[in-house]
Amino acid sequence: MTMIEAVEAVLRASDPDGEPGYQGRFAPAGRLSSRGGIAVSGLDAAEFYTFSVVADGLHDVYLAYDRDDERGAVVSAVALVAGGTTPQALVAANWEEASDDVNMLGEDASAIYSATPDDLAIGGALGRTAGFAQADTPEAHAVAEFRAQQESGSRTPVLDVVVDPAGGANALVFPTWDFTANSILVGRDGHGTGVGIIWSDFDG
Image 1 (tube, rainbow, N blue to C red):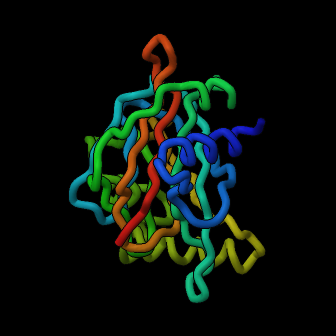
Image 2 (cartoon, helix red, strand yellow; image 1 turned 180 degrees about the horizontal axis):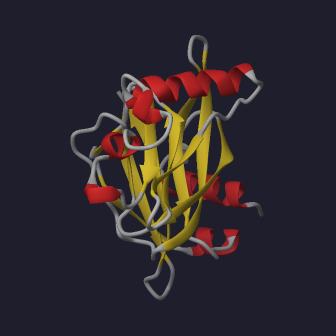
């Protein structure tokens, strides 16, 4: 079993009707270096919620990409798997719904991230980084980068940006619609250790 198959199995098992809660297909997006709580939100989100479920460290991130006729790739679910977790351990974990209708995504771009300088919202933190600092808005720079990646042949556009040079924490920025993550699943093993978080059921 691959890790993507394990993520898909967790999502199917979490729904009474066996629906996956996302469109498209998952693909590896990179690794998130976490320092504190982890969040997913739109770049312009005024409010965001953090989850201190997994320990600080380097974690694998998977994004489910759907296709839109006008925008191209659009992400419909986000899965973070704690470093060192196997696919078998992910499936065997105890998964619970963390909350409903809490994480607002962005009309053009969203991000999964951890600690940022001065505890800024992700848009403000990105605004201090190269590329983003010269753009009119963080969303404008992200959209331009997504477009360039897709024009180069990528079907899975994503940006990996270091937002805290001192601590090494990064953000993975990806294309979205203006949706809310209506389902947030938190997985823990038999010892209560966090093995992952999955955001899905994006709804307008």
